[in-house]
Image 1: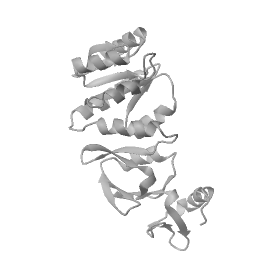
Image 2: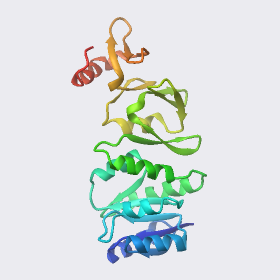
Image 3: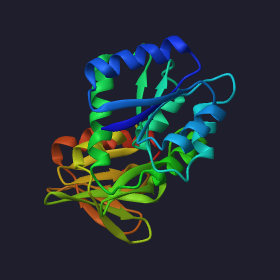
Image 4: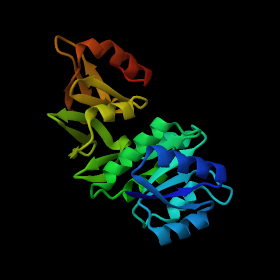
Length: 252
């Protein structure tokens, strides 16, 4: 069972979530509720929950205020917000679960299932919450949380040259020449970076277009990077890719 604490300043919201959890998430045992940051901190110390459903906006302080004061504790958080605002984008990059109000049952079930799976492992979630605070400071989040050797780590996307699919593994190649393997799937990485300056130039490569030096045309097309490396460019994607880098003021 997951011992859960619900933090929300609205009694109606607390009661509604309690009912949904009792009906659709039998693995969750609500052990306490709180209506302010101070009360939530006290309840967390006393109850030691595995999971906290945390409202973002409360009169006495935000959910982020609570999180910042409790980073020494090891629990999972599912944020609850009534607004699809900039924070949601930061959640996505930081691998943080969230639910929008009014709560959709399917979203709640999926979020709880993800937490259930995480609690079965030895993964410490505190590092991804640190990444969240960094991402909240940016208009566009720069820290992408990934799993490395069974633990959450974050990478600064500004330092990434490309992601490479190597068998079933994904390598992250950095500007300093170093690379490491992550446990995330290539598909999940691609979804995260669709709105960024990354482009899948080949089935095995997703490239940071800001690291492109030039595009080499010929029978076989290649992309030359600022570090001198050359990566294959899928001919069927070449025109679209050329247009993308042109928009970023590169000369192909």
